[in-house]
Image (cartoon, rainbow, N blue to C red):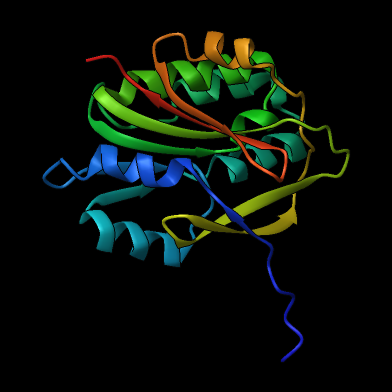
Length: 195
């Protein structure tokens, strides 16, 4: 199969900063909210020697959409994370928030803030242009400054384009450490939990 589609590669400005937030830790604990990407797990293992928990919330969201139980999603998210409060050093949120409605996004942001330790880092991507198609994106780390994007089928599309102030309000317990607007209409935001 020599005809494999070349995945678009985008530069990421926040990933390196996210990594440097974690390198000072002995063996950091990382939570990844996306599907399992083996090469990402290896990348973080090699770069940080970390313990990584993949909690595929995209799959959870799909399950709720297909079962017609979206109204139960906020309560589900509130109980979703087994991690203790303040026990996680870094969270890869990817662009999950874009696919949630407000109540679910608020529960998720609250839970992520709870499990993050003081001074911990959260990396989130937020779309800035509305797309109608129902696709998720797998973000595959090529290196610390480049991400490949592989899109795959989703049960629902992006729900809303959040303005910066809405994002900041959502993650009220965290502060924005860096924010970058990328060429592909994604905004990368690196949050830190105040120590």
